[in-house]
Image (cartoon, rainbow, N blue to C red):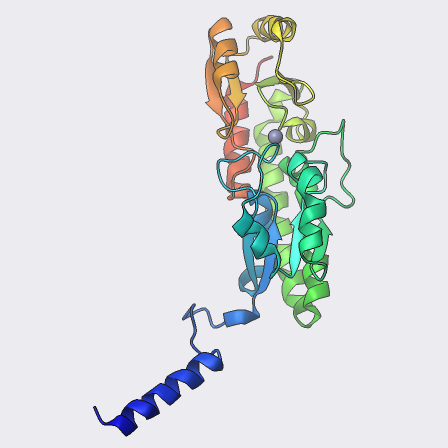
Length: 285
Ligand SMILES: [Zn+2]
């Protein structure tokens, strides 16, 4: 190859790299303009993507399969915080946030921190607020305000997408309400008290084996077993990201089975439907 041609080629490459016009995500056309958003848990990722569409790039702190009650972020995740423009926290007293939020905020003071539970009523210090479609409506609105503040030029885009997603939330809420209408005052037996808000919304009673995040002792287990037998409950609901040993023990005692329901699924709307269906099968009179 001619030396001059080689030099010319090199020059082109240098210009291409230094001007940043090499698109690492060909096809999406958004390049670096996406707003970097970090969220604590997976359901919030669906909320942010629902409102932000292809204008946001979302990453999640508590990965699939991990528990937000005990998870500790990796060093690489903390580095990601430094380039984020917005952080969406659940804001309901979830341990991951009570332990880590201060350090996360310290890493990037420019980052807008959105408390998605602003305006949501937190009942009995139970942090699982997102598992109510009504609460989700408020959470999505808080996320919208955050995005509109960072990117006011596209406020209408976010507003339209928020309204569309809220309509979906309402539609699924109405569907579940209709499906569970004959189950009012019925009880669901859960290992971990994640479904208190869900139960409240549809008039179900949540019997949780764990109380106040503590493992159940023999007295509590005997109490729960008695109640489950009296109400003909045969399903014990457990979370896929926690040990099911305790749930299996109770299921054996009552001659029933363990069923898994996921409080942290990324496909939030779809999952809420699945969970409602499972509770319908497992509800005791
Ligand atoms: Zn939980």
